[in-house]
Image 1: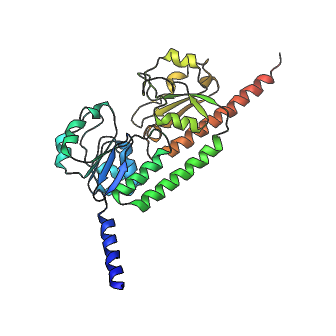
Image 2: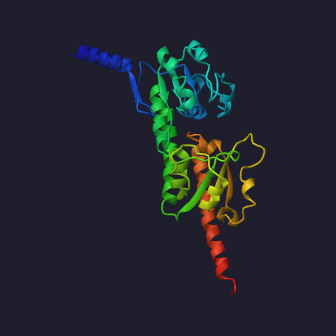
Image 3: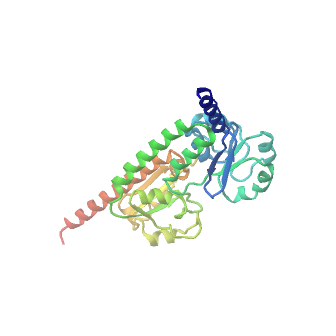
Amino acid sequence: MKKLLLCLFCLLATVQAQAAITVTDDIGNTIVLQKPAQRIISLSPHVTELIYAAGAGERIVATVKYSDYPAAAKNIPRIGDNRQIDIERVIAMKPDLLIVWMHGAFERQLEPLKKSGIPYFFSDPRKLEQIPETLLKMGAMFGTEKQAQAAARDFSRQLAQLSGRYQSSSNVKVFYQVWGKPLYTLNDQHIVSDVIRTCGGENIFGKLPVAAPTVSLEAVLAENPEVLVSGDSKNQGASGIEQWKPFTSMLAVKNHNLVAIDGDELNRPGPRIIEGVRAVCEALDIARNNRNVVKNAGAGQKP
């Protein structure tokens, strides 16, 4: 009987070891891997950050331009950027998993990658709560569950603290500026809007149908946001908020609520975005305090 139980145990262990890994990506595709991925290509900077957080950064064999965090990512070979990917080189590197971000440029190159037979996972978190979910899925695909679970728990804990702190705060109208010339922003399809909502704010252009719409200066002034957040790039010379300072009639300028935040901590839906959430929440809280200061100053003036 003992020998039989031992054989059954060994058989069960073998079946479990050979069991396929199955996950669902962010557009509903089912990805099946026969074993944890060892050669991964990341086709987005936020994907690179997620892979490192999930414990498999050393398995990334190639990535794209601007994948610069953490510091070790700067040494990974590049196979393109958000406009063009070297498909032949991707296939020649023999990855066992591609993790990609869906955008117009990639869609045009998707067909040859599909024909190559390389498994691919689409990563496009649009809500903050999807980030820990993605980390857990990556942990499953890489066989790094322990580290991925720890990263997911830490992110969820910090998010819960911030959500709980600001969920009852008064509403603040926010304009988020991705770039100043041309002037464009992001709508509610993007995770930046979820950041703003988490902090008790409202994206003034959240309802526009285009994900990254171009808007006019006049449209921003008409909406009269109370806070203007510029997602500045490390490579730009001056902050994007400078162009707004002459418009003293806009509430954000009048109340000194022009805020520059590292765009990588807001535009990239990876673990670092929690720092962007914290910065936005603090900016909106300052705006609420400034609102009260202005109100009290007005009340104290003699008629």
